[in-house]
Structures are given as structure tokens and as C-alpha cells.
Length: 295
Image (cartoon, rainbow, N blue to C red; front, top):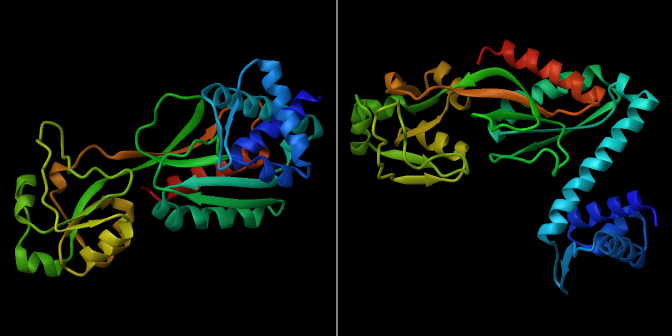
């Protein structure tokens, strides 16, 4: 059997967690998909999937093998595209991920401006407040906020953001302002419980984290900001998330002198031998535009 085609089949089964769904998407018969996976299992001598009537899951060996297959197939696609000249012209689907609010506020305008000058490119955005695996989820470019782990990814620093404690003027008129982080225990606090938000608020080095007793928990940043805007309590967000409200005077920051070090913003892409023209062009474009924001 064609081993590369079998690898494509395996990757599709892994992505869809279904032999039948993989067959439909690949325009193959279900038995052909089953034979392809069986061939790879026989070739590798390892069981690649655990199958039941309700689910299809990769085994640990299968997961490692699927990652290798994705890398091999990606290298082949890049080599063919390079030989065919498509790496000289930006074209195809460009997939981008970013934190939700940063994506909505900053990435969408940057992407639409980029697409306007590159008519052969189609944009695809996936905004999550969690870390996304670029290779596994087929992402070309990511905007990361926070310190990066060592990896095989190319990163361009484009700015930084602060963690700020803020509230509405009406709140401060009724309750006053906290002077030190410890004062927060006597204030009404609204905590964001999103995946990247710590429940305890940390401040500058050598300052003990504040153990809060929140009056409200919100699972989205939008909700915690909305509650703060009513003048009901204080919340903590990243500076870009409330920049518009701060500029308009609807919110005001406190405890600025106790802030932690700013978090870096990076434009990230997987570093390979043949970076596609669409990725290379968008990275250059996005780096320039985000730096111009002065974050």
C-alpha cells in the first residue's frame, strides 16, 4: 500500500476520532480506511488506536506515531510547494490563533488589512484563552501573551501588557481606593476564572500574594469587566483588555506601584525549512502593525 497515503488516513482518523468520518472526508470507503490503519499497525508492530463501539482513541504509541506522520507529511507538502513555486506567492488558507479579546480587538483588523492586499489568501481565526498546539491544530501563526517555553517555534516580540487592578469612579467614591495590596481583602473583588487567570492576585516580587474573598466569579474577561463598569467592585485584567475604558475614564487603575513585571507579547510560528509565503508575509505584516500599537 502507499505508505504516505496510509499516514494521511491515520492523521485524519486521529483528527476526527472516527473511521467513518475520516472515510467521508477523504472520499474513501470505510473498509479502505480500516485497511490503511491495519497496514500501518502491521508495519510498525504497534497498536495505534483503541477502538470501541462509541469511540476511537490513539494509544500512546499511536499518538507519537501520528505526530511523526504530521511532521513527515508537512515536510513533503512544503517541499512540493517550494518546488512548484507557491512559496514565492502568498496563497491558501492562513490559520491564526490568539487570546479571545486580543484577537477581537487587534488581530481581526490586522488580518482584514492583510487579506485586502493578498487576494489569494483566505483567513481562518481561532481565538482561545488557552495554549494551542500549532502543529496538532494546523495553525500557521499564533499571538502569545506571556513567557514562552523553549520550543522549535520562531518568536518575534512585539510588545508587552500589564496586569492591572481597576474599578469604576463610582466604586471609589463609595469605598475609597486600596493603598496596598493587603487592603484588597476589605474591598469587593470580581475574579476571572478563565484558564490563564490566577485566583490569587500576585504583585511585585517579595510581596505576599493576596488571598481574596471574591464576591463574584466570572469565567470570561468580558463579564468581569462588565461587572466592574457598573461600579460594583474591583477586577484584575490585562491592560489592553480595558485600555478603551481607561482612556474614556470609565475605569481607573489602582496599586500601579505594586504591579508585577509586564507580560511579553510574541508573534509565533513553527520554524521549518520552508516557511510558506502566506505565513512569512503575515508574520512580517503583523509584527509591524502590533509594534505600531505601542503596547
